[in-house]
Amino acid sequence: MRSFAFSRAIDFASLPERAALSGKSNYVAGGTTLLDLVKLNVMQPGEVIDISRLPLSEMSERADGGLRIGALVRNSTLAWDRRVRVRYPVLAEALLSGASPQIRNMATTGGNILQRTRCPYFRDNISPCNKREPRSGCAALDGYNRSHAVLGGSDACVATHPSDLCGALAALEADVIVRTQSGERRIAFDDFHLLPGSTPHRENVLEPGELIVAVELPPPHAGARSWYLKTRDRESYEFALASAAVILRVENGVIKFVRIALGGVGTKPWRCRAAEALLEGTIPSPEIFKSAARAIFATARPLAHNAFKIPLAERVLVHVLTLLLKDQPAVRHL
Image (cartoon, rainbow, N blue to C red; front, side, top):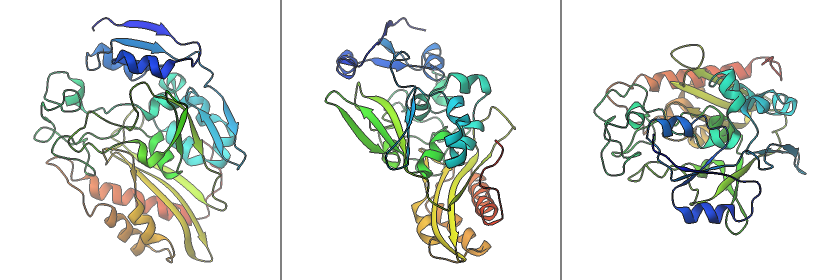
């Protein structure tokens, strides 16, 4: 591990400007991703700025009935907050399906959004990886790629986005609030993460020095049910092979509202707008659910070892949609 300068921010004064000017600064709060990657020499910051003392650990009601979540709210706190469990259960379910209790007690909302891929070629610091070292190549394309993405990949990168939380935030149509050198800006969640294209080292739209300060959830959709389902190789402390966050409202036998996001299959949290458009206004049935699932993967690009993810994710989505049609309780015991 290379040495780096360390400092602690006690207020926001000039923080984004200072971090931008340094060129190689990274913020740290819980540290559950950054410190691992620094130890592996995958990330080599010149300076680490501790932001854990900043006043970003609160949750507050919005005037429109939504919820503002500070960037430093711990994953465990967020998952067990009654407002989240009652009004946004898909978010609580996603959080509780990820990592371990110990990690959830440290990990923060902002850090979870920014967590980096678990691609072994990215993390081994030996193999060619365009995300770690631009223009060096992608070992996963011709290597063992069972865990990699079938949606959103390119000839430069096929690394899967790892977050459970982000799938739920995509389905909930959250906004990310970012502090900049000139104030704050709001970013629609689906626009926050970038596809790899030819620049996989650029994973999101943050500019140097910018800091996530909050996530804002819109008011819950009246009458809608939600569910998060994750499939994985083992029951706990494992990343998704395929997951689905779904919000659904059926009225008079017709689908009036649906939001779908998939995890484990894309290079970013995968919002499924085409499937939503196909489902809305239809009478729910196994056939229409299967058609919507197939539509998501019409442009899929399976690799040598991960083609199984396509039928798996299709079945996961159909199963969740089917569950939501049944007489499920509005709030489940999480």
